Every structure is written in structure tokens, then in C-alpha cells.
Length: 290
Ligand code: DGL
Image 1 (cartoon, rainbow, N blue to C red):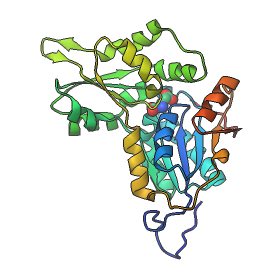
Image 2 (image 1 turned 180 degrees about the vertical axis):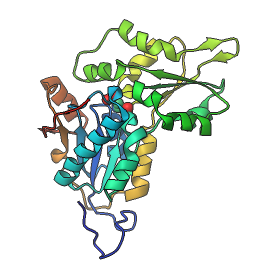
Image 3 (image 1 turned 135 degrees about the vertical axis):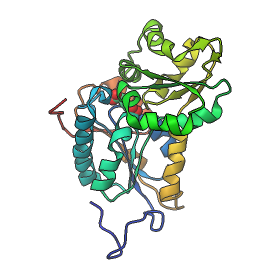
């Protein structure tokens, strides 16, 4: 755990930034890499730990209670090991349930990733929005509240896919699924009736932008795809500031850490290296319930 530098002061990284902050980016698997890529662009100088709780993957199938407990346990270990200055929970399925638990338990700042319903509502011309997410995220009260608050005037179509996160993992590991399988998951996003048709799809699972070029190629008609990653990166710099000239971490030390590591292949190591994560490590944390 972090110790405040001024006795009795609340740690506030906006006031007292580390010249080279440690940023922990967390997801159930590889989806958070889409967020990591944007955060890395904003803070190329930072020290990075990308943590994939692959022992718990997919989070979309876990109950809210199991998921909240799991993420707090894993976070405890990760924070103890790496002492991050800030944590990005690059997972909608986790963020929509676990952020209050994390903020209560730890004093460091957490940035979450939640369905981009507000930007979708601001972007649509037809008023027909689809929210493509995991079954967990579409079932959340948090998601329903976002719709009521920001998209009450829109026709919001919630699409919970059981298979897409796995398809995205397979894609990155060099085993792309067929167009037919992908289209089966995507088709429910495309709604058309006498009133209009879908013109915006909010990618509300961080895995899905990994498949975006294929979504674009397979879409029955063109739509705007909303990926929240750039907004999350902006939030990181709002909280910890921009790079300080003359200070930077060794990029060869950026680590991808897995809680199981069962799926680590040569192809995946290559993909991680290409994305700026040359070191791969396993911190064994089996999922005991769920
Ligand atoms: N990447 C995660 C999200 O943004 C979820 C994938 C899963 O573990 O089900 O929701």
C-alpha cells in the first residue's frame, strides 16, 4: 500500500505526481489491451503492469457477488506486488459492479470503464443505439441507470454476447474464428423497423475493439462504433498529469501478468511484445468459486 508523503495528507496524485508513475491496467483477459494502447500513447514514459485475470475469465459469466470478491482479492495481490500510483479497471463487466468496493478498500485512484451510453446518445442521428457487452454488463443496474440518465429519448438495444470476448482472445492468440460465428454475435446489434435503424454501436466490453476491423467488414450497414479507450486515457492524464521531461521508465520492463497463464503461446507473446509488453509473468491465483 502507498504511504502518503505528507503526514496526515490525503494522497492526491494531481497535486504530487510521481515523475515516473506506475500504472496498473487490469482486465479479465486481453481486452484491456485496447485501453492500455491509448493510455500508453498518453503516458509513454510510465512504468506499466498489464494484469489479466485469466484464471477468472470470462467475467461475464460470474455472479455480481463472486466477481466483486474476486476482483478485490486479485487487486490486493497486484497492489501489494507493484504499488501502482493509479489503477485502470479496463473491464466494463468488473467496473459496473466493483468500483465502490475497490475505492472503499484502497486509497489509490481507480479509473473504471463503463458502457459508453452517453457518447452513443450524443452521436446517434436515428435514435437507435445498440450496446454490445457481456451478459453480465447488460444485466447490471448500473447500465440501466446510464440509459435512464443519458439515453432516455433513444431506443436502446442491449446485446449481451456470451462468445465474443473469447473470440477476441482467440483472434489475438492467432486463431481467428469464422465470419459466420462472428456475425451470429453481431447481428442482434442491427435493428431496423419503420421508425429507423441502428446507427451507433457502443463497444461496451474492452475485448470487442480487438475485433473492430472484422466488425466493420461484416456489418450489415455502416454504423459508428464507440470505443471508450481514448476517453479513459484522457482521464488518466487528468488525474496524474502529462509526462515530465527527462523522466521515463525502461520500456523493456513493461510487464503483462497473468493469474493462470494457461493460454500463453508464442503467438500471444509476440502480440504482447508488439503492443509494448515485452515481459510476460504469471502470478498464480486460481479462481476458487464461480
Ligand atoms: N473485457 C471485459 C469487459 O470489458 C469482459 C470480458 C469477460 O471477461 O467476460 O467487460
